[in-house]
Structure formats: structure tokens, C-alpha cells
Image 1: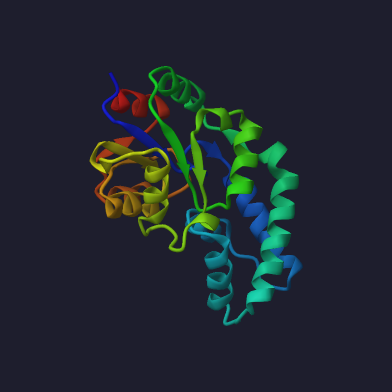
Image 2: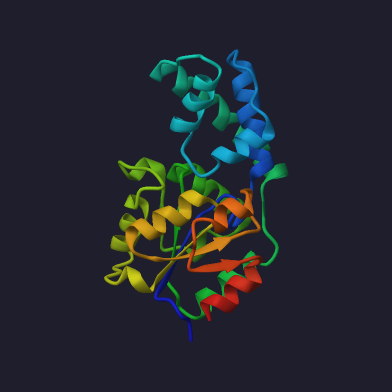
Length: 221
């Protein structure tokens, strides 16, 4: 029997390996708009927060102030390249398909809680064949406060008719995900196979730690 009433998954770095696509798209967008390219490490560190924050933050480190319109222009360029590169640079992590299938067969409600907008998130889920597993996808365009605030989890819980978040598991590879889950009153699991630093992730003191999707499956059941 599953040990949780529902599972809320982060997307990038948790279910799909999209780091290379994100890094390449981010750097190209910066270059095409006259900004110095960040390092791959710096881009990876921003995975988990919306582009509406990560792009101005990168510009600020360079001493550049961007207008809201300019930020949106850069985001549009980023998304164009991300869509172009997705077929070759985005894939599911090994073991995730089995994890989701086992949870679906056990009738565990599942949702996506991501810093992506819903449209791009659903595009990625269709690309890897996972969209049908999820009752809902909650993105950054559907909340007023982004991760690490609890809003994304709370919206997902409402849609899944979850009344006790204490039995809900939030799974993610970023500190933002663990803080978000804790702020909502849910249980948390750090997915250490993702794009973020494991030591920083463990320092958030998640309730569970999984080094592989197979380990997460054993936690769920």
C-alpha cells in the first residue's frame, strides 16, 4: 500500500533531464540580447525559479537593469530555442517511467508543481510520454507567489481535493522544492539525481532522500 495520499512532483531535474536544454537556451538568449553569457553552473543554480526572476537576477549581477519588456523579449527568445532543442536535449531520467506507472496502478493521485509555465511544462510531459499520469499541472503562471512559497502546492492540493497535506509527498531536486513543501505542511523528498548540489539539498532537512527513482518508489510504498 502507498505510504502517501498523493505525490506532487517537480518537473525539471526530477522527472526529466532538461538541464542541458535549459543551459543552452538561457545562454543563447542572453547572447542574442547582448548580455554576457552565464556559466553552466550559474544557470543550473537558477533551475527551480521562474525565468521572470532568473533573467533579471543574472542581469543584475552584471550591473544591468532590464525593463519588464526587455525581460519578456529575452524569455520569448529562450522559449523559442528551448522548444527547438527539446527533441534532442530533453529526456526522462532512467527509472521514472516505472515509478509513475507503479503509482498510477496503485491509484496514487499525482500532480506537477513546477516553476515553468503550464504550456511549456505540458509540452515537455507530452514529449516524454508522461502527461497522462497527472491529474493537474500547476505552473508559475497560475500562482501569485513562486517557489519556495507554498502557493504551487496549495493550488495542486485544492485541485486534487487533498484535505490533509501531512500525508502528501512533495518531490523535487532543488532547495526551492523542499522549502515549498515544508511551507505548505507537506512531507518532502529530496531527489538527489537532479541538477542541484546534493549537500545544499540535504541541508534543507527533507523528510526523505532518494538517490534514484527506484529508491523513491520504495519510499512511496
